Each structure stands twice: as C-alpha cells, then as structure tokens.
Image 1 (cartoon, helix red, strand yellow):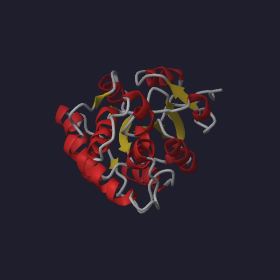
Image 2 (cartoon, one colour; image 1 turned 135 degrees about the vertical axis):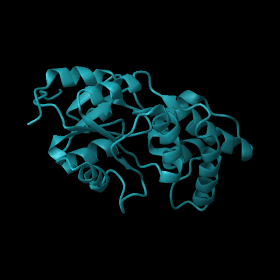
Image 3 (cartoon, helix red, strand yellow; image 1 turned 90 degrees about the vertical axis):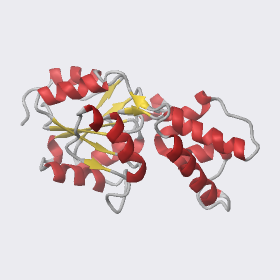
Image 4 (cartoon, one colour; image 1 turned 30 degrees about the vertical axis):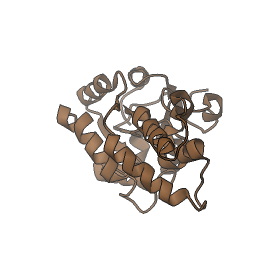
Length: 231
C-alpha cells in the first residue's frame, strides 16, 4: 500500500535506464549480437527486456548463463560493452511523457537530476543527445563511476543531493530497480517505483519498500498534485 503523500519534494532524482529512457532495445540487441558472434541463436526481445535494468551482469546471465567469477565472464562482458557502446543510441528513446514531466517539474520549480549506475562514457552521450540537446538540463548527473560505490549504496544519491544543495529528506527518487529503492531508503529519500520500467516481477518489486508506484512517467504529476507545499 502506498503511503500518504505529505509534501512536495524540493528535488526529484531519476534513474536513467528503465525510468527516463527505454534503452532495452539496444541493450538486448547487444546481447543478441554477442550471441550471434558466439554462434548462438537470437533470443526473443521479450525474454531479454526485463533484465535490462541491471545492464551487462544480468543480461550476460540471461543471454549466456555467465556470472561474475566464471572464466568466460569478463571477456564476454567487455565484448558486450563494446558492442553496446556502438549501438547505444540506435533504438533507445525517452519513455512517452518524460519531456512533459520534466517541463512540469521545471514550471513547479522542482529541481531534477539523474543518478544511474551506467558508466559515464556510456551515459553521458545518451544524456546529451536525448536531453541536453533538447534543452533539458539536469541539475546533477551521477554515474556509476562518479562515486566509489554504486547503488544500492546510498553514496550516489547522497552525492546528488549534496551537489544540488538539497536535504535528502526533501528529495524523491524514481527508479525501476531494487537498487534504486534501497539506495533511496538508505539515504532518507522518498522512493518511487517506476513500474513501467524493467521490472521482471512486479509483485516482488512491491516488497522492496517503495513509498509510491507509478505506471507511467506522467503519473508522477498526480502524486505531486496530492502533495502539499515543501516543508
């Protein structure tokens, strides 16, 4: 059950893949390209899509049954990342409603930023093309290599709050992964589950502890309308 919305946030932080951008077509495509290189058949996109939120690790497990520690894991991970780097913007696109949501946040003077576990060399070009080149400027961007530890550790979201000079208690964090919810809770932020993202099992995801759940980006505005003024 969702908690009552008490007050509007001063800032909203977003995960990137599966929350702002639908990058699964290129992530799954890279996994299938690697399978073809290894002489394997293509896997259905619907099978690979739910694992896109955790990037290379989960996709390699699903596509090749490889895990960290396996002898072939690291070379295949590096090859996957190289393939993905070449095609990362072929089919990836913002989820419907994202730009309208960001416009609404800016009109309400709510600061917004991005916290992703994606490495900066992959994330930054995508953020530039999909957002900054359209004049949407996040107040902060924290990537997987910005802090010493990625999500679910709270360090990345706390770094984002510090950069924006906003108390974590006045921030909402929207993401589709368990690491997003856990990092948000540990940082003292309000976690919002992006159920429209890459959630393999929604019933399981609802046990992560998110305060709220949205089924599309613009549904966040409905939560904001229920909220009072920032405390």
